[in-house]
Image (cartoon, rainbow, N blue to C red; front, side, top):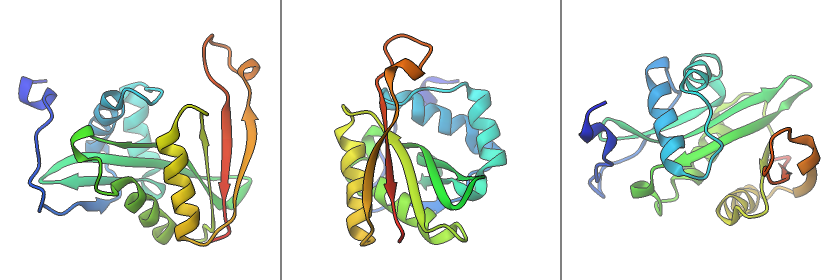
Length: 171
């Protein structure tokens, strides 16, 4: 990767965001956005390539001036086909403050057929994600439940904080 691919580029404030399904070609950029977030559990680059191929219909990338600047990855739960489980939400640091994460969630809610419930897990220390999903619930006039899902004892690795399930719906 060259230096200018590593260095975040400032986008024109007037350039629009394009929201679309990811393709395999976006997998590497999704990995980069996740890595650069410095808050997400980073999966292997291979996992993002597979995600972009196998779960494109339930995920979205945000593109600005030809580069991926954010994504939401998700899947429809096999045992609850009306439920979209949001796996990761990430936006490049220089693109934050435009409501992009919320717009990507709204896009998925509108474009994934048959879905009227959204779920995600969030650690207690992630105030930004808690605010994002609470805002989504308010915007859509939906109930917002929080349920302890994965406690520390569930994780085989040391130091992983508990994950609280946020269930929003119906919307």
